[in-house]
Length: 462
Image 1 (tube, one colour):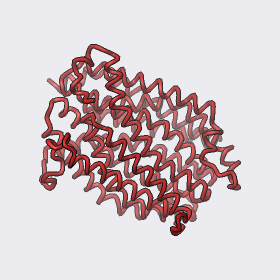
Image 2 (tube, rainbow, N blue to C red):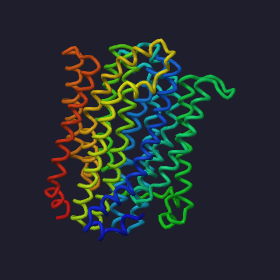
Image 3 (cartoon, rainbow, N blue to C red):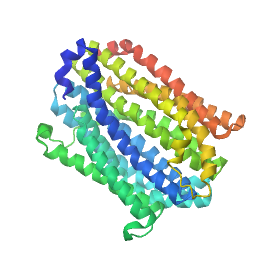
Image 4 (cartoon, rainbow, N blue to C red):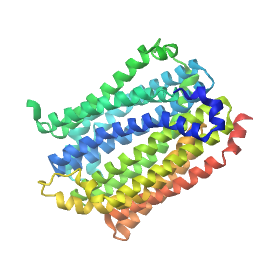
């Protein structure tokens, strides 16, 4: 279903709004779940392999993710620019935005890869155990080669989503996830007659799966007749400087916004490492469960950006308002259901990540369950804040949301996490409660910003 063709009907019917949102949002949600399944597979299989290997991979994968997620801000900038151009029926500007976004991501990859090479001394300086830092370094020095295909597939995801043609994004992610699972099983444990590589095997599997996903999406963009008029890779070397700087200007604050939240969770991982190896491993399990749940509102937030961006490109303010109300209501309902699942079945969920023969299994379960209960409490506010951020990006409002995010997550969220975890002696649950406070503040402030959008939209169009 092409959303652009339903503009008039969307204004008149809430049912049409829900259908259009789900038609775009469900493939994006599925894509997010498939992609997080790659990281989840790493956590599950390394949890079977050993506690130290799991803890080290938590540190390394989050370091990779912090660098990756900042770069993905530029891919995120492609989404509203391309969506608004699609709303105006302007394939040329869609192509320029996507192509120049890929240029920026390529340059970014060249800059950041050398930084990841020196993760080991950085982790030691942050107080992590030398043996964990060494294992983490072994993982990251292989995994870093997946940065380029991982960022390129984010750029292509923005292209397909902006065109409301996200099915290929989902199918490529599923294929990559299956490939990752097979490679993990063989390379981590030495199955299928392959060499046993442990954490390095998980890294190889991640690189290969990211590359597979990117190649499938790139091939689809080049050869499917539906996308021929966009000519994404034709004369790829040719610069479009206005589009280049537009993507950069919009993407930089998006990157800092995402980095502020991800950095908060990375800092929480460091603090959990201070509590001990078992606590850090339990934190890794809880993070994976919370991340899986978060993929649903995150996928819907991308749909929110597209739906609002297309409406704004058409000059359809009534459609913009209805699209925003629809996606927020859907996200809140789903997050309430996720929170209920966390509250009702914490032990069963944690047990999915444990091997009962592991000597630390019982202790991991005991430490992880309270974290899951706290994670349930912030499912709703986390969903609300990410949808609000997506709505604001749809109208190309990124600078003020960046400031809101940085203040909410760091001076407020991080201080609360440290104060509750160590000042009041609440340990892991206190650290996680601090995360919830930061997310809650961001949810309130970002929604207030969107509610008052007419003030700055009038200035932008004056």
